Length: 605
Image 1 (cartoon, one colour):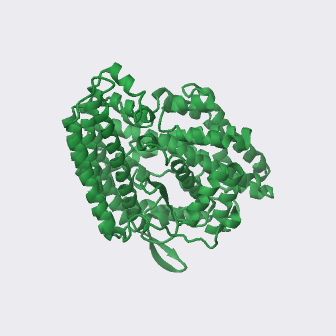
Image 2: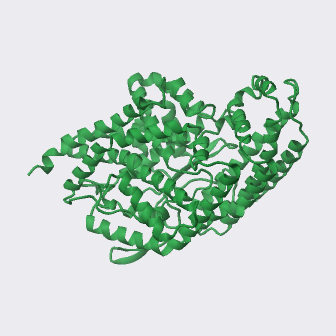
Image 3: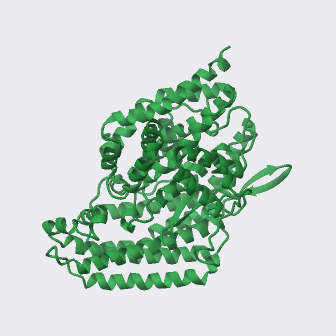
């Protein structure tokens, strides 16, 4: 498989296959115009379609569903394209304008769906049950039934439509303000005797340098840079949260977790037991942090030390080497996953170039009309970059195996979306550790793998605690910058069990996930995905190549059932009980035990 890669690989993506011309594309302008007309047609059609009172009266409803799904795919196509433009070049002045147009169209689409939901809720229960047994409804029975049930808990169609319209310049507008603020982020750093200004993404990558003095100095500059932006970030976060809370108040939703749990098709009991199991097992991970501190020659780790490399990490992994490594390991588990990844590399579906002007972070986005995906990241040659690349390819493969399904059946939640990506990471990380030729190399690679467990069990937990506490205080009024810093540090101390000597007060400003308006509480789904994928990985190791088709079947079901049903059907486990979660944590604990064994001689006096 590796020999089929044509090296060297191009590190910039190709967006011309979708809409030639970038933000000035006439084809994209035409797409938006056609989409607007199609949404208007749906709005007209939905107002003239009565709720079926008999199971045989479904012609009108079938046409609505067909147009609904077509609009959904075209909106995703437009949103993905604009998202790529925004990430690729933050100096592109036209891209934010296009983003506003897409968001306006999406708001119109959502407003029209409030009337569609009214059609669904007007169908008698007995008739509804019969309709769902017929095509084209049977293939999308779960998401349709989910819409109908949620609609019964919301406000009137007119009020929900008004909320969606106001959200464009309100709710989503505050998210856009944050993105603009990040786009102007610059951190001065001295490189080879010259001062250069780094973007947020470039600056973040620099924080993982091996030299501790340099690392601490860079982190100090990082905190100061975000301090300069703190007022803008606090303004955006407060008003974004305020908008969300007002909507919840009028809907009668008391729990801030109600919507994210519903979006993730997950029971509150499942969420609680997951965190409870993690908390019960944190002691050994604190031991790991303390051992790492000794290996670095310090009493306790600072925040910026948690992800610091051990040993000689000066060797860089080129993009071509990283791609070859990923495909080689994917091939051992799944030829289909490897073949998809090869296609992504060869066809320039990946933007990985390390250059100024790009937004920070990484993502994978789908183009459902074209049947392709695009991956965004900044590749700097670290092992963590290789992991990110494998992670995003996992996302892409998840979408790839669902391309032939109805649009509504492809709408899977974030927590199971993180399953495929984290699973792909595990394939690469586990194989790399096992292939180590010396104990020194194994320690470095094992430590990199354990860092991911620390991220999901502690860093993500801190985000969840912070956001939960922040929303509780935001109900009482605006939360000051000083209080946001306090809430953040308090959450980090709880999540890391006070194992660190210093923390990251402005993490709430630096982490764009807090400002996402498409998915509230953009945190716990990551940990769920990590834990769930651990269970899947254990099953894959046990069953070998025979598991590939079972894995694909699981992924294809992610848009058609809640996570508890998904786990029961494909893994035979109960997510509301601690056993599965404990088995997932145990896999990470084994890595920590091996790390502690290999390093004990290094800290003995």
